[in-house]
Length: 229
Image (tube, rainbow, N blue to C red; front, side, top):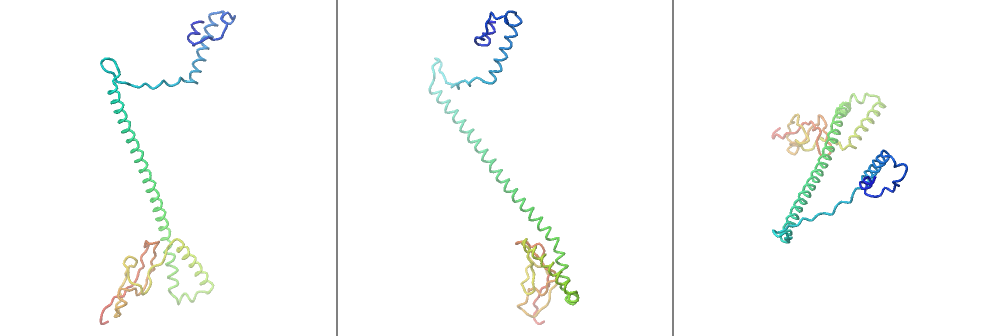
């Protein structure tokens, strides 16, 4: 029992003359229980960390060599600074890479959204072409019942308003100068009017642009000046 107390590191506070500890089996059982309690207590309260050991340099006589110790400390400080700079550069690089990634991801999302909007709006251009084709034949259009015409024109106006809300605008009108970036020349029309040269004579199919980007050029006939016509 005394050996058990020494192993535990102190007095157990138990009366050794107690009837409970009379038999060897009882003593052994009690000792095992006390050691188990000690181990659990040590796990809950780990020992305080040992003081940091400072390494010194010594000469052949066993005395501390301050110059060598200082030299070693300077070398250790230099290594620490280099590691600090390396970690800082790595962190800054990762931060810059992440910022670039976010920027590219935002641009990708914006481009995808713009492309999707352009694709959807382009699909509806054929619907507008059908309206324009119906309106262009004035003789047949005038024969349609007035109430039907008013209703169809109202639907057409709603569709055009939706396009304008999304930034879609018509391009190509008679009399404006031909621009290959916005117009597609289908046919040239001879003219003796020099001022009408390279101007649009007729729009066969309207064009459209989304913002500053042309999503469909206008198909047009263009005047071509020829002297003596």
